[in-house]
Length: 149
Image (tube, rainbow, N blue to C red):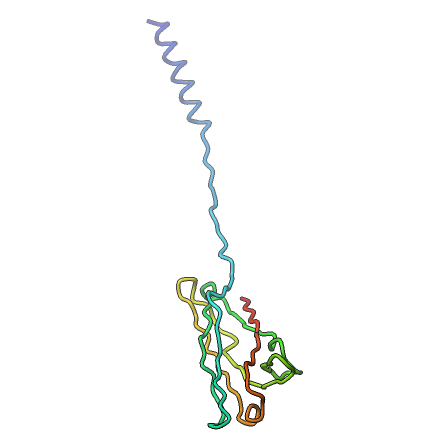
């Protein structure tokens, strides 16, 4: 009986000392959401310039869409196009003829998140004096937009 009692006390002592050796730890979980912006689509601006009608012409616009991380401040810049002269944007025909045009948009704002795209609001126009004496034909330019948070 004494041996059984001693054995039980030894086991109890071992078990209780294992409980005394316990400890806890914590794990910190964190994440960083990156502030980013991305275009979803390109845009187009088209003009029908008819000298017989005359007048200043507003472009028909298909606006690009983009998204930015929620609450990220964004800025859009552009390169003034392939045919710029100083700060003047120009469409060019196959030769050397240029038609100046104006091109504007909202350049700053705040992102709403990827699931809420933002549509640019491009306004473009050509003044009558800039096209009434130009040769008939196609004129074009390409403006590259850059967006950054």
